[in-house]
Image (cartoon, rainbow, N blue to C red; front, side, top):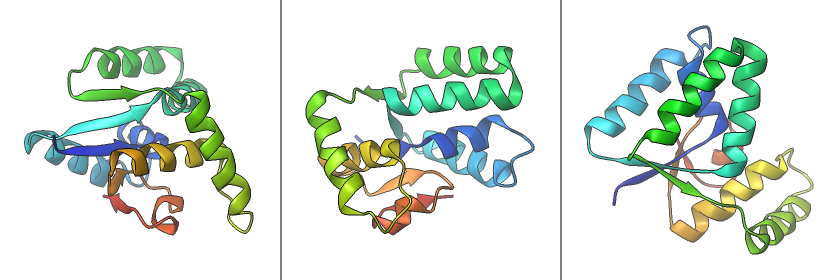
Length: 135
């Protein structure tokens, strides 16, 4: 399976035509799908993304995003379990010199566990942790 992690910043850049990275991120998303890839994302990312889309673009846009992503066979959902949250807490406090969010740390844990090397994101924190960013 050819998998790419999808972060809140990547989902948001795709959803918001006013985002400076919109075109490049949509092109990266579409290219990935055309090449047969799937996206891996988490329940924490869904929480952040739904909230952000609702705040910036309105409830209808949030609902539309959810319907598309939740129904897609090309999106694999990962749950942040207690064990994953504990690993994320460890990262969160170990990298006190960075401004990683706790959700960032949960994403890093999932990416490491699944041996994913790259993320659809505009968030520089992923490159700080050694992951490639698309676009």
